[in-house]
Amino acid sequence: MTPLLLLLLVAPPTAAPPPPAAGAGGETIVVTGTRLSETEKALRDCLARHCPPDEDIRATLAHAENLFVAGRYRDARGVTKASIGRNHRFRKDYPLPVSDLYRANGRIAAHLGEGADYELSTGIMRGVLDDAFGKSDAKVLMADVEWADMYASMGRLIRARELYGSVAARAAAAGRPDLAGIARVRSAYTYELGGDTAVAQRELRKIAADTSPAGNVGRLSALILLARLDRKHGDPASSDALVEVMRGLHSRRPVLIYAPALDLAHGLATGDDAGGQSMSAVRMMAGNNFTDRWVDIGFWVTPQGKVSDAEVLRSHGSLDWAKPLLRQIAGRIYTPSDDPGGSYRIERYTYTARWMRDTTGSHLRQRSPNVQIEYLDLTSDAPAAAPGPPPQPH
Image (cartoon, rainbow, N blue to C red; front, side, top):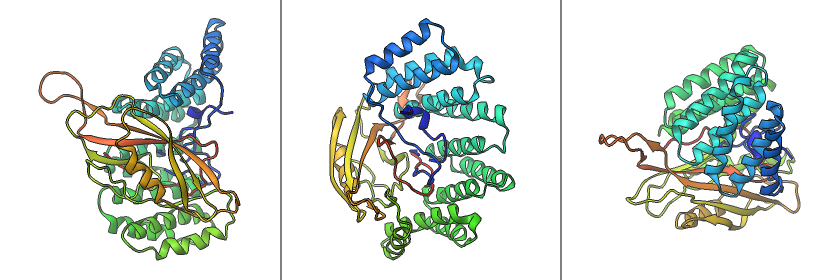
C-alpha cells in the first residue's frame, strides 16, 4: 500500500489536516502492516546499494510511517531529516518525491510541536513544486492550500487568507473551479477561526449560492460548513436538511457534519473542530508534559451517521485529556451511508504545544502557553467529504 506520509495532503485534504475533497485524495494514513524491522532493513539495504533518490525516499517514508504509527515521532523525524540531507540536492530531478519528503517531515514536526520546522518544511515543499511545475499547476495550487493551512494553524489568519485568495484566482484562471472552490471555502472559514462567525457565514453563503456545475465542489463544501456552524449555534435545521441532500448522493462513506466542542477538563472549550488537524487550543497548566502523549481512537460510524463504541485502542502517556476527546467523538454526526455495516474509523491524536523562543533572556526554548491536539486519520479509506476548513489556530 501507499505509505501514509506520502498521502499527507498530497491533494486537497487536514489536519488534518480538514476533511478531504471527494475523489481528490486526502490527509489519510494507510497502515501498511509491514513490520518495523522490515522497513528498517529495506531502508538500510537501499542505502547500502546506493539506490536512486526516489527509491531512497520511498523507503524512507515507509519506515517513517511505521515509526510514526508506533509512536516513535522523534525517530521518524530523524529518518526524514536524514533523507532530506541526502536528497535535497535532487529536488530538480525528482520534485515529487522530494516534496513528499518535506511534506512528511513537516507533518511529523507539527506533532512534535516543532512549529519552525513545520513552517520551513511546508514552504520548501511548496517551493520545490512551484519551481518544477509552475504556479498554475494543480499540484502547486494544492501545495499553496497546504501552505495557507499551515499559517491558519498558527493563527496567522491574514497571511492564510492572502494565500487562499491567490489560489482561488489562479485556479479559476487555469480552468480549475474545483480548486478555486476549495480555496474560497477555507478562506471564508478563517473568519470563524478568528471569532467572527457572522462574516464566515456571510462568505460561505455567497459560495453556496453558486448553483452552476462549476461551483459544485465549493457549494457542497460551503453547505457542509454552514450546517456545522448552524448546529454549533443551536440551529440543527440546516444540518438535518443537509443529511437528506447527502442521502440522495448514495455515498458508501460518511461525511462529518458536526462535532461538538472539545471540553478539556482543565482548559478552555473550543468550537466545532470541523475535521481540522488542530482540534483545540487550551491554556496550558504549569508542569504540563508533552512528551510522547498520543492516543489511537477507534469507533464505528453507523449507516444512520451516529458514532458508537468509541474507545482508546492504543496510547502513550497520561490519558487525562482523552476522556473529553472520547465524548466529543461520540457526539459527532455524519451523513448516512449506503454501507449496511457502517464503517470503522481509527484516528490518531497527539497532545502537544509548539516550541517557541524564550523571552526571558535565557536562550532556552520553551513550550507555547497554548496546548493543541494534532490529528491524523489512520483509516485506510478516509471519509469522503467536501474540503473542510483550515486547521484551527492555537
